[in-house]
Image 1 (cartoon, rainbow, N blue to C red):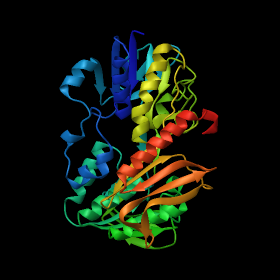
Image 2 (image 1 turned 60 degrees about the vertical axis):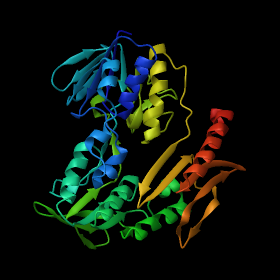
Image 3 (image 1 turned 45 degrees about the vertical axis):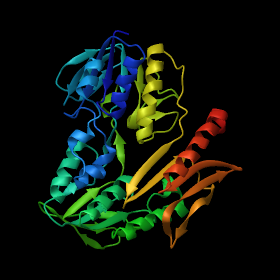
Image 4 (image 1 turned 120 degrees about the vertical axis):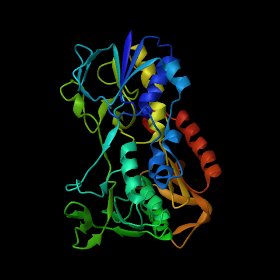
Length: 394
């Protein structure tokens, strides 16, 4: 290959560029990014950056030395608008084209929005520009904040807002937040963190609409209640950025469909990170974005799938001074046991706890609240177990 184009100046795009150079690719490397920024770390956006404990310099994932080593052409602030797979050409929205021998799709995902979210004071939190706008709004003084969505981004943002003295309410349509990730029992335990942090948690009802003229003034719930709000943060998930690939012949279904090695139906095109549906699963996790690129690049350079992704799913969240860590693959019929620490009054006891999800006599997932050392040991056990098992048994 003489030219490889990475579409997406994201975390996974950066790791793909690093992997290309590390694995011996010495040709032309082009990195296209729709944001004007070089790759930055997104997890701190809802935490330290939002509260002012971290600045933009600390978010940067590259420095001058690495930029020189990568020898890449950076086309930032430029959006890809199409992929001509026959002509092996990436089409850009400014009219330029890039002839390329290989493509790494790392375009990530875009925050879902609500009707009426054009009102002043309504925010999403997905990008650095999102975080800048929200932080500026919050730093103007105490606000009534309503967070729509009790997932990890919503919970972390609520925690950050509460720590800055804002009056915060979290609205979650499901009976409990985080049930798909943690199961009912452990979701109930983690939901108690909102109450401990002084945040109101409203569950079991959706949002009927946003109220206000030029600026948002409230959130109307499906059950008829109206929550006054000066700031509304919409955290209801994300949509993979695949619209630019329409007509490219690539298979698209809630992401770019890939095999277990991140390879699409075209061996010269691979996908990684939030946009990639690898082996039937699309995982919006930091670990997926950092682990998939090495394998995807190896297969891209080989022209066929030689390696597959076998990593244990892992994510973490920092809320209300507490760290939640989870690894593995849980199902609703798993048995959950607290094996270290304890649970008190529905929430974590002092010192936290470690819980194991068990199925058929073996541990298939682990959850930790403020037990990082115990969690790392349990996670290593999971990794060793998955390496031992055949893929079909997972």
